[in-house]
Image (cartoon, rainbow, N blue to C red; front, side, top):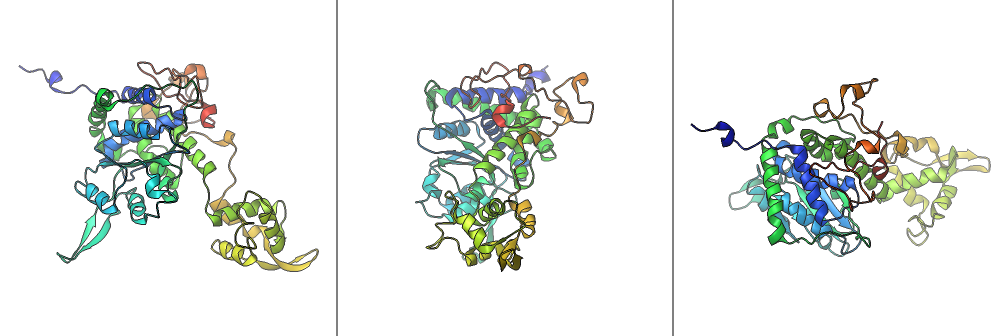
Length: 435
């Protein structure tokens, strides 16, 4: 008589598995923050539940210079992801075919040295960029006409993708990604050398455990509606990772939401806005407290910014005509206004208000940001600790109450990952206030 208990694989503890992944990654790579570590772990895990997602988040691993660990981190991602397909260059047709072979179970596309594809000297590569953008959302196939069969062929594009390179990736890709900004190790920061033959089996074991855990919860993840701290495309990008964190439980739901807020805020703060949006933001500073400004005075204030692009935009800098053309798309137009010095062409502050609110809103103070409540199914506090004013569960803010600390809050060096570690949740590190 067989024992059914032994015929079935033991259930996987999701929180423990994610902890093991984090411990393994930090053995070989020093990440810039615990939020970055959390994002990498959850992104890798999400590759094993691709049938559950409507959006396939991108992972961008970028660095300002060589020897910052980006390729080593991509090795970690390759070792634990579902069906990894690594390349240092690829034609769009090759990527289309690689995904289209099994559209219901696509590979995880990993592109190293991506700056040679999308860098300033590499050309536009619009076809590949378009493929990666379209593949972020399910149901966005490419259409190709097959002359031999005289028919239109639909080619799947939906797949998880990670890119590593020096410098920024195309803005449309980073807008669909969790962006990890790597940096060179400081003196005293040590990591273990990684060798595929010796250390690869450990990563492969984690890959198998991830697959066992997540493939058994695809239906649950497909129907998941996690509380999101973000909106619009950022929420679409982070939803799979936060859904995995909620499934794992423990400290991961809170860590995931903190990482989502922190990394999205980092991207917004460091984002080089488009010229029209940059003009909107700079006009707000130029207006100061004025209700209206003459066009020439507005231009003078814009061109006087030594760090702005306006003085060098053409031989004479930004002109009234160029500014008018840029602002017209936002439904902002100059008018004849009576000023104390006489009538002149100018702009009313009130005409900018709607565009400022939509395209470049004033950043909220850090103390005003909050991490949404973690769903009740992953409760982390006892009933007596719960918030008395609402349904949001209380989150410990006393650092001593957390089981993991980080000796170097700016990165992962010195993180004492134990048998059941939990990602460090330093509010100072992530600049997020937890209500």
